[in-house]
Image (cartoon, rainbow, N blue to C red; front, side):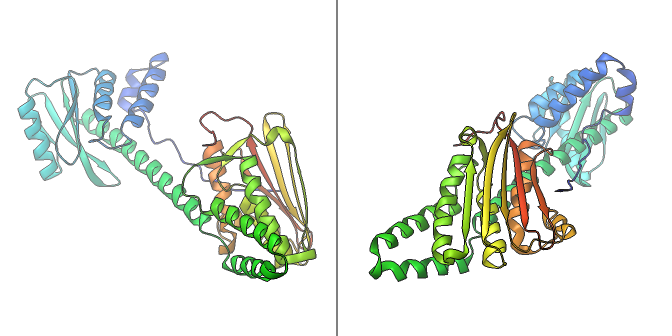
Length: 362
């Protein structure tokens, strides 16, 4: 049994050492909680809509009179009004122009960098040394980097889903349409049914809206795909499906099951020596477990591990995308597991929670 290796990302929001030393015990928990909240508020950048909230939280956390945050546009958002807003704005402009600290009286303006690039300015009035302001600015920069990383991960996940939705085999489409055409004159009713199946299959595969569906929704598209596959492959393809009714309402990401079935048909039957595809699904406590198995040639377990790690054949894009999206939605304890060996067929097991807050079919 092979579990997919996963990337571990360290926490990006660490309490500054000087603040950690001055707030021991239970107060440190409150400090970390505030730090997490500020990190969330800074996900849209120093000029984002929640930057004012981050500035207010920083002011309370640092215990100073005023904190300002400004993006590259130069417009500060304040937590506590400074004594001289005009002077503070001038310091922000100077920092953005020179990328170096500017001080006037008890106002300290410090450049904030994210990934070694100037991202904005932190302004603090009262109570902190220049070194403490510098370390706080570094702290803010780390939060910005984490926000950018999360945004990039979201964009990458959306791009993976678009790629998966576009991964319809031209060969399968051509064969399906050829078979449908062959029945137009000899069996018009079957041609009509297969055309409806083809429409349902492509509609589900190319849908551009909705993040989640249900097990029942996925199987509606799978049934349409299998009807077309049987028409193309004839008696070579045998399918057994056993799905417990209680898992049909379970929500899961769009196109989480269909690629597994297509992969079993393609590699186990169409391109391999096998002919049997078995799909089973059941509830195991609070989890939904679905397996897709073929009796094809199988593969070397080390190669299977490479496939799920994204280092295998580009034709296995579907498995990689499904696994990554499942782990992203449900956590690292879920995803795909592959059981295989040379000459022993392949079994792919999908495991997700039956209920997950925030995950619902649309």
